[in-house]
Image (cartoon, rainbow over all chains, first blue to last red; front, side, top):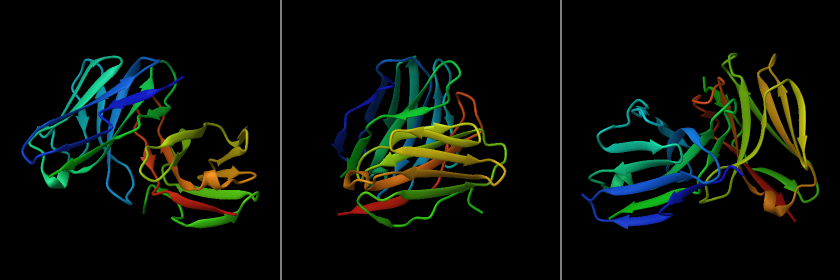
Length: 116
Length: 112
């Protein structure tokens, strides 16, 4: 149980284009999903908290107009990197928390974004 | 002062030995404590969570929590080369929407 998927697993795009990353909880409903970014040899950096049916809460320094998050259902959250630039190249990872009393975050496999 | 501190390592242990990974945290309000394993280029994988003081065992893994000392540890018995990875300690204040605060991770190397 507690499987989280991400799509795509990797993507290469040209500078200035937008990229959408999907995060799905496969066998549970996720009331809350989180989006992280990780640069090589660095720790995870939380970008935003996504709650189903409401606006995402962004961490300080994360541009909400650049990183658009939509949590339209209890099993799907999407992160869109708009007008991507080479400095946005990173490993993007989502996590999901099941409803109820648990607060355990289960991570997706991550999406490696390379912006040329 | 970092909120969650871990020794970055690498911690090198021979195959079959016990690996001991340590973590301290600063927020006394922390309620939930997690250990994740992250292989290079992969996302974190949950190993264990612990909420109460004391020990919690799951197979070869034992998590230990001491809230008075603000200390949580992970013991790996009979270490295998496949255990070689970075181990992330994470804490939160409890609640389903509670954010995790991660340590920087300890790199474990299990040698043959």
